Image (cartoon, rainbow, N blue to C red; front, side):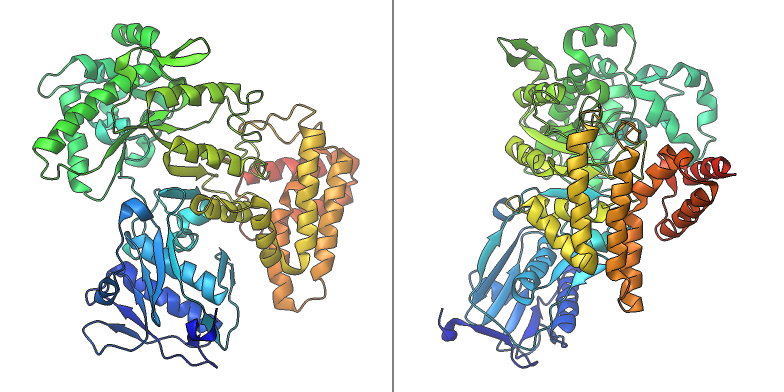
Length: 625
């Protein structure tokens, strides 16, 4: 490429460019300009003036969003080609255009431009790479980028409670507040989880007068009079863990004011109040109960739990689709009604003939805009890929069955050991393979759940890798891992790579042959998986990592030490939990003191889900006395 084709963005610390925004710029467009200038200040030392089209036109601009100049340049966008969060980077002459069909895409386009042109790289809220530049020149740009998945939620304590962090990872956040400047959080409505018994037909509101609309665990059936007096926090666990709908009541009762009529009217209310939402979750209680009325038992015997649920949801979809076409005023609006494949509803409503799944009958074939949310919680291991015929035969069969009766899917999967939150979850071999499977299925939205209240070791690395893959499935996991480790652990990076390599081999050669299943509720911290010699080897590796930073300037050393402390908690926990008898009282006291230090910043507040770490510390301390 000749120098005449080069765009000289900055020359010896100066730039002739301004950031151009539309006259009535959106919050996302304004924030995208702020983020671009923040990165420019860090990389070149100077921000660009921000101008709008009602002012004097500049000769050279970075146009962000839907400017008139962008339209004059012939650059058009549509969501079908860019998806939710995709973007266009294009130069026309010396002008630079960043545009998208969605608000989040404009922000993503700014980050992509900074990555491509300025060497910017975002790894985590506490590690951002800004390359220093005096002169920035580059060739013509013409990129149109569509994310691998429209919905990209890497769910962890960091992305959940720091939406800016999620936005900078080019992800979304459906579980928490999301400022409009980040663009659309996702395409989910506020109906996105256990919506049936919480939002659409809340048990608290309807059970007393309509007990036949619900299944409720026996211990709560005579307490309906007390429900209204409970605050929402106190009441939440009752429907979550103890209630389901009576789906056959909705299937066979079309009376005005009845269960089906009320359900549909409430659902339409959500659709009207959320005109930008696409995915409406019809959900289920987070439990393994099913309605045990005579009609539900009869239907379940024929159609399975999933089939009874799907027949009800199909009926809901048909009724609401008719309203959309005839009464809503937005007949072309695209909406999906989502139902869980989860727990008792995981097994699809199919029969197997000659090794192939077939629908039980046409009533369990999902309507065109009914979407199945596959949530593999039990009967699955994420250590092996989802379609592994030996280790995940149940899930393989379930997915093949669901693929036969439905066209559209979302996924809610997991990446945490719920019983031992000090343990990193070993899904490094399968993360990309499973995402490729989801892509093949045509999955619209991916929600990947860690535990929301406690950060597990190496979760920042895992968040980074997954966020990149959800946007671009061509990326290599090992390359992404090495890139993060090099930038995040710096001088200690060689030893972190050594540790993770050791850990992978240990699972393969020791833990798995001794019975480790990889299930998310598996008791991973056992002596047979973690011999004392292995834990001491892990300690040696971390000792070398600590030594590698010992002579650094204090501020840099402190940052890296805190990072090593955080990720070293697994082997320390295992030693205190499994092998106290191998150490003297003085050594155990020293180990407890060290635990207190490494657990000081971002503490492991729970050692198992909802069980305080303080209980485990008390147990360890009593052993030491």
